[in-house]
Amino acid sequence: MNNEERRIAVYPGSFDPLTNGHLDIARRAAYLFDTLIIAVYERPAKNLLFSVEERVALWQEVIEAEQMTNVRVEHFTMLLVDYVRAVQGNAIVKGLRSPNDFEAEFQQGLMNRKLAPEIETVCLLTNLEQLFISSSLLKEVARLGGDVTDMLPPSVMKALQQKHGL
Image (tube, rainbow, N blue to C red; front, top):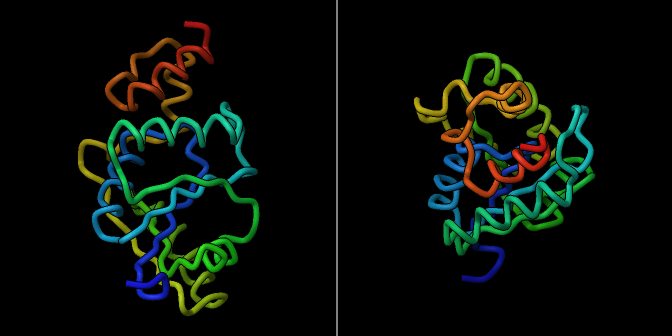
């Protein structure tokens, strides 16, 4: 199969930090596509705890630990559809947890469809165990001393503890 026939998907996000919910979506997308690129957005309009280099490195550790051989991680700064085109992707993967997620992803998906009709958006529903998990909520709970161990991959939990001096 040549590169034009391969199914290449991009899973974009800020991943600050990456959670077990993100990992679940990545595992499932890696099963569906020949290649999955975890695309870490370098400059989201969010209050970041981890630098882009740290977020990429954490994903790389998790990908290696999970032995996800068809997954790679990169960072990007451009318009998402331009990035997907640059890596010869044909799909964008998004995870949905709530109706609010659906509303936001629906609007983004329609804009992406307008800008790049050749790129499909694939939405995967979260597992029930991950339904309530969000990166921003986890950061706040961890900052206040709450236990988020079972919501993060071990390497991410260690990095979060180091950030908070625990």
